[in-house]
Length: 287
Image (tube, rainbow, N blue to C red; front, side, top):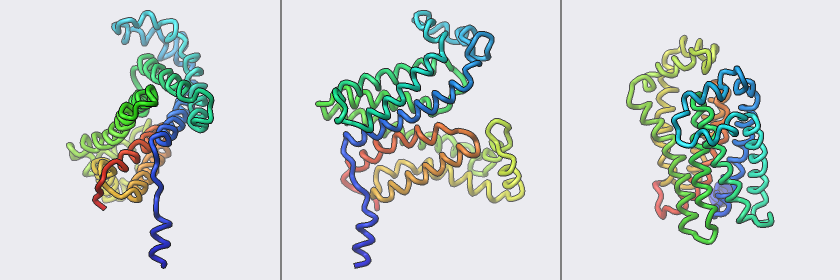
């Protein structure tokens, strides 16, 4: 009886395609809200005389075809950010309401397409210094647009969701492979160097690993191992998938607290519903 109750308690629910789409929509909306607020807080940098003024940035991106047509928009970047912020709130509402919203199947792809365009404009306008969360936002909105543009075509919807799932998995896996190629992360030296920097570091943690050399090797090695092995989420029991997602969220929260990489906490987990749905499609599991 105890075993049956425990099994029932630990059972995790399946999600359908529409639920996955709605969850991703809400999470990407949250990222738009947060990242736009973060960019708007330093809006003076984008004004005349600022470090990231359009006059300065246009020198680097001026060779992009058609960029001159976008100058009126890119020159008013703070306004663009405010539009992006409002769109984030709209996406949260659209995802939360779902089919209860009138013209849901029309409004959602239009809103996602606008979010995709704004992602491109932000990356063009801010060609350096953005976190990988913005790149993940771009590919996630691209997949989400594909998944919502033709709501009556399940094959197209599935292609969009699986694209997001693939990008989410590769985001971890390729980062892990890049770390594993060199010895710096395996030995923990890279972690020590990161913590020693003024931008990304933390004095207390740096002093801790300085006095306990074994700690940096363990933490550095575990990070590499987690990222390299992340693709197993496709082949394990859904309960284990949820546990892996929990580890991933904790990992991003720690990075946010220590290094200030806050947007990763939202954007990478935004791909989890697609990954979870992809796991359901595989008819076998390792565990």
